Amino acid sequence: MTATLDSDSVAAYLAEHPQFFQEHAGLLGEVKLASPLTGKAVSLQERQMEVMRDKYKALELRMSELIHLAQDNAAIANRFHAWTQALLQARHDGALPRALVNGLTTHFGVPQATLRLWHVAPEHADAWFVQGVSDDARIFANSLMAPYCGSNHDFEAVRWLDDGAAVASTVILPLRSGGAAFGLLILGSPDPERFTASMATDFLIHIGETASAALASLRVSSPVQAPVQAPAQVPVDIGALGQDLG
Image (cartoon, rainbow, N blue to C red; front, side, top):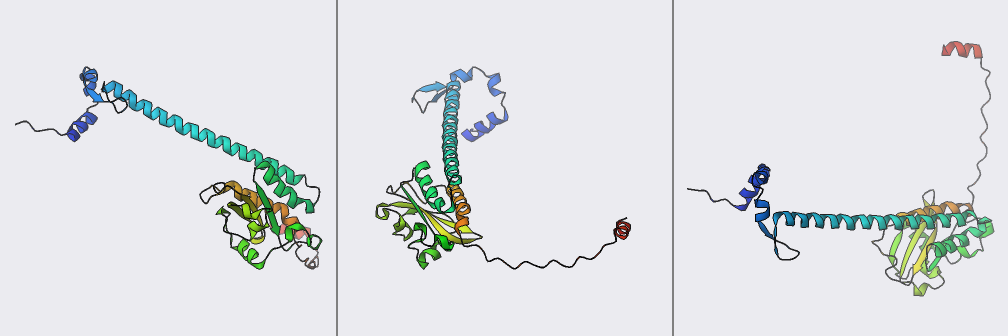
């Protein structure tokens, strides 16, 4: 009595005997399969070519995505470079905040940008970038361990923008020095999809770190400690020291 073969047994046999189609080459043209592309019956060879074309198309799409991603990253890097140059060209410390926010709107196409600082040096006490900061805003800044990206929930910081009421989505970056926040950098857009919680934040983190480093010079200087008196110099017998090292 002949045992009935199921499809799994046939597949296992063909996998274990790759020479089968070499010994029965005629089957390659005789076996007909339904093509999912045309719905027509095609040979095993033609079906294999269809599978290979599908894989090739998938690889082409993936390669295209990677190329576009690389191009986008290169464009962002160029904008970041131009923004950094603008910071370096600021003629004095007091010009840095304006150069920083103007650079963001110019080079990154951000509709609105501003910042606020606290604990600044006395000569900057009346500057625009220190006005209207509440204790709540400072607490909020210290609580931000990463950039906030998403909808504007009537944040106080967003109201510092020229037209805060028009902002639908925002980025809020803490400015830090030595771990403590000394300011906030705010970006705003009327487009609710411009800044979202799912967006990548790598370049935003770099912007926050660069802005923090650039603006640190506006902060109150740390108290100068009294110089430590050097210990009295003790004469050393160089000959004896040489003997000890030998």
